[in-house]
Length: 221
Image 1 (cartoon, rainbow, N blue to C red):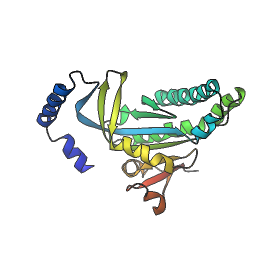
Image 2 (tube, one colour):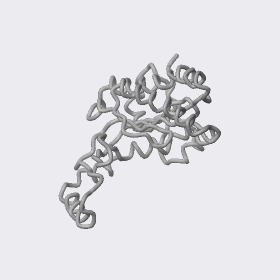
Image 3 (cartoon, rainbow, N blue to C red):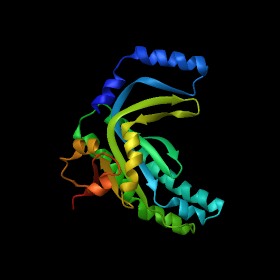
């Protein structure tokens, strides 16, 4: 994270020079980055095996399948104070503004609790699926904390986000088991002393897929 922070804080002159160069090549930029990064939590929730599941559905039912999942996850995220950035195929990317510049344990605890709300909603979601003759759904959630760069896009009214936490959420998501929450090492450092959660580091054979510590999060029964 230190190297990334140094790049972000290396000064605006180099950034401005780059923008001037791009504007000569591309007169109207579609994506505009801010000059700084904010440290916050980002998360990704992704459907398990959606390609195989939806390949057996008609277009109408496939749309219904994604509709139920994405809208339910979006509603829970928003109700928990998160900002939904975008859906990426069968997954939803969001971040928590409440954690920007914060080191309070309560903020990070609220993030994990909101992710468990998503997991807890699965029986309700699957009842909706069943009522509409749709297959049962499972999903995985990954979350991390770190420097996130914000960008405005002419293609959307919502800010897009980039940076290490976003990248790691995407990479480590598939390491989770269905209906499981995993977090990156930096998020773990923020939340590890919270007694209501239990953390289990993934074995090295999993960890080697990405050069980064990854932890399963469970409720402390």
